Image 1 (tube, helix red, strand yellow):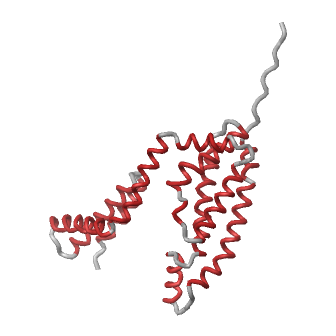
Image 2 (cartoon, helix red, strand yellow):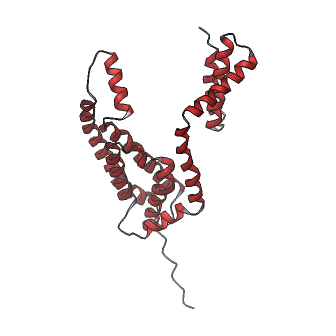
Image 3 (spheres, rainbow, N blue to C red):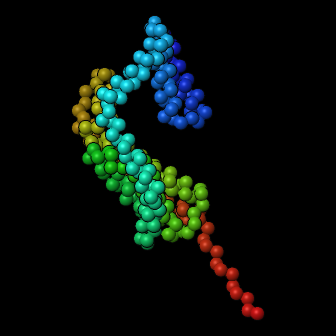
Length: 242
């Protein structure tokens, strides 16, 4: 067995350490792995390179329908350039009853419930959190506390991203026709444990409920944390009569 194809792992590690573009790092690692595998099997250099590129092209052509999802990214970029984040921030800032914690709590509920019904694409970091949820959460905090520190802004962004992750991760396992359920079922069957997808989904409900309660409490306490980190506005200096 040749170990040369493992060079791709070294390329990934070196690329991420050097902070290169992740997409370029992954593509370069795939090329290195493919070429090394071809060379180790006795293929000459030219054919190893062309064969690897042909494999890339065939895989892209066979799965081209998957690349349609990438069309949404330029659309989101154009919307952000046109002021989507600012409009979302201004919209939520005008609703005085909404706080950062309440907004994220509502998003957690919607995200986890929709994932439980298999609608995992309704949210996500690039299409929902970055352009809408995070700016709206910041706008709600700014409406109550004024200018926010960089630390507070990063805390809000992190909580928005975590809310999406938790809602999706614990909600999707309730839906029986999801990859994670099928993966668990296959793993258990290889070890002699026969279970039905419905059984796994039922046992995922208590875990999802606990995740919702625990993170929901964290979100409802977020407003108090933001208030502690944000100093109150200074009072105007009194006028001195001449």
